[in-house]
Image (cartoon, rainbow, N blue to C red; front, side, top):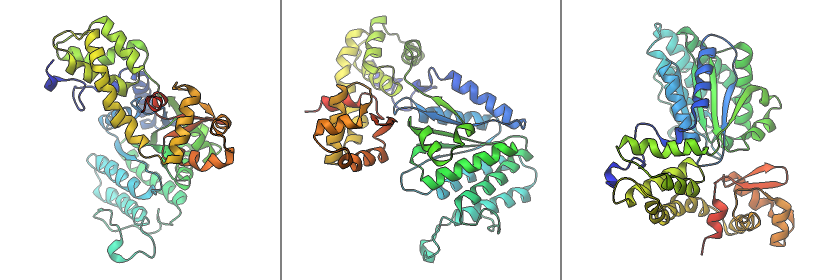
Length: 396
């Protein structure tokens, strides 16, 4: 069929396939927005799951919902070894601009922007030369004595309080969305938990919505023992069959086309219900189909093309980041699990490689830092990417 009309191509369609089956999360967030705006206590939200399940797309949809409710909203993506202060400043600047449109007191808005600027400027090192100093692009003088101590935990509590009070002035709230939250530095995780705790105590209208890998709860708990009381965790998993079929049929039907039931069976078997894979196989099947409707033969013909694209863009890009020692560890995991999406025992990996467990710790820790594996439970390790073991076993 016409590749130009392909509803599975990136950016195509009115509603991304990854949002199929996520109505529970969307409706729950609606409740959070209403409760917080009315001054009622509500926990912040953490979305956890493997890569390819649509967490980032869902995070973007939650941001859109917040904005539609008149909230200020800012989104950032955490990066390893990068301090939170600078990207957080940019995100909250955006949120304050959202609120400023509705606020009737420009002086009050400028006051909060001054606090934000003071917070942001602390991202500069004390010994940095003038030409190397970052300027946050906030056109007001920096405030003094508020959110500028240099201690991220103190400053974040004070900044969140100021921004939340600005939102309360207009009867709404602020949503701060953080993707890849497991990549935050430990001190930033600790500060974030402390700030969320303070907000929950005061009922201030600011919520943090984080998205990250399955071990995010352990990361937060290791930082603050009370973190389990601060966040509501939502596990984002692969789609059930009904939702997976909807993710395929809805975009096809928007193009006034169809797909045979047997082709839906084949697509589900190939994708495993993972939204990213559904989109990859769906795109290839559409391009391979000579006529409407898409048949099981079209899916079979398209499968190698989809697998080739995934091997380069989804699996290969991650595999290339691993060192030879790390690749050896990954392959051992794949062999032990026989390519299934299961956890492998760290002791079993050591036995398989004929090494002492302690000698493998650097490779395992580096793989975790790179987001390729995570600790499923004590003494076990698993891939963060679905079907990654199968991909490794299929390499030449």
